Image (cartoon, rainbow, N blue to C red; front, side, top):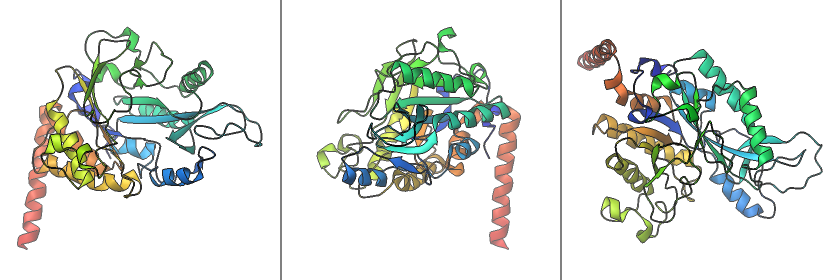
Length: 361
């Protein structure tokens, strides 16, 4: 497990210099029950479920695997007794208090936001030198950025005893590992701002066609993000919308096209930017995103191991697993203490010698 890898990092390291494994649509894991989808679009609802699941590991497992950036999509249940998001606002279901549910676009899961906050909170209590970057993103029929829902979100964060890093008290560049130890840094895409959270809703929208990289400043701090979140267009079979400008000739392989975009992010941006680089994407003929994530993650591991590629920032994956996270974490080895680096080198040498002995025997 990689449940304490940040404990080995130089604590004065700003987080934008780290390679941080993250997950796209973190709560959309295989096995989550889908409560429903927007009424009146039954065919589209069925299709949306084919594109729904991005992970095969739940959030507790993701954290143990080394994931430290979570993409939390939330839907607000305004009408007591009914799970909303993209659901119809009317129901004869028994009344109950309003609630925040995890979701992915039109699919709302039978998983509450508060239950996942409690998992993150307990993880940080058990591992006080770790931190989590949490992206909050509204999706659904009701405006999650409204006053009532925003109050409910804040109440649930407080009830979960989540130790939120107060960005309003921060000055200078990005917080360091020491600054964030035991805490959650919230990047908020919600419409209603919170002074303690880093507000990124204006800059972090869905990308327009042919927009690959987007650099923007947070709304309440002098901190810049370089974003690559292109999940649409790179996967269309139309050549003019593919990555011909980045990878030479048009690529028929959608995964190869997406990886080119992800890889080119290494050369983009300015010193001081926090890169948020998505390897995730979807393609309607390939089922759930985690299926594409399997081969994309292998491309990523091969690029790190065989081509010695270096990546920095939040690296947002579909189908994140321990092996992929471990390879990303090892990109931070220059920030480990000298003794730990030496121990790793010796372990690698010993493992290679053992494998050679087995082959010769």
